[in-house]
Amino acid sequence: MGNRLAMRIGALALSATLLAGCETVGSLFESDEIPLENRSAREIYDAAEAALAEGEPEVAANTFDEVERLFPFSQLAKRATIMSAYSHYEAGNMPSTRSSAQRYLDLYPTDEDAAYAQYLIALTHYDNIVDVGRDQATTTRALEELSEVVRRYPDTDYARDAQLKLDLTNNHLAGKEMEVGRYYLKRGHYMAAVNRFRVVLERYQTTSQTPEALHRLVESYLSMGLNREAQTVAAVLGENFVGSEWYAASYALLTDRDLRPASEEDSWYDRVYRRIILGKWL
Image (spheres, rainbow, N blue to C red):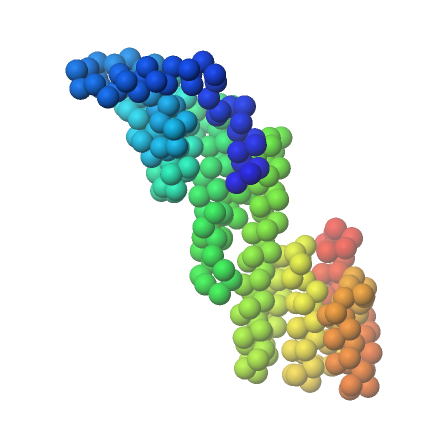
């Protein structure tokens, strides 16, 4: 939240001139003598900003929507659309945020605020990521929308912030795979567990879940009697996380069976190592 507000302070904060006029605008809208349709786009827009400044984002969003409805071809309608998305977000109305932001992207795809519109869409999913014990559909959608920010607007502040959130989101998804893998491992479904831990290495190898995923693979392979595979994985773990608790645990499991970590050239795990550490898939 802090990063988002900091980035938008210049574009979305109300100017002193607008704030000074809030009382007059507020008085105008308290009167029933002038129908909304007879007010100018500027009057309605200023009233919306006044409502936002007074801590009424839902009222502000609905009022910004009126600018767009009554004056669809005006310059203020364009600004009102992105402000509507922002106001809906502040009000916690995520579906309406997405609707307004998507409408802005559809109408003004190359505008300077298009990146912010896409970023807002991503935030509506990211802010609702649940714990790893529940369905991760929202997390997956957040990943998709954050990736879209980075892909379409790479040189913006929003892309940089989205990348940070992507890292957290990937770690979250990796944590889900780990939870399921540990569940299978505990119940003796070793091959199912292996498949989950390998997903972490294939898709989320740069996350903090990687060391444990490697250790759990050692544990799974040893449980299946696949000692050579366990030794290979332990070698990869030792190459990259030698000082970690997970390597210590894997090393103890091996030595209890008179085994030692031993790399196997050109194995799947050797390729994982080269992908994670060397940054190339050989």
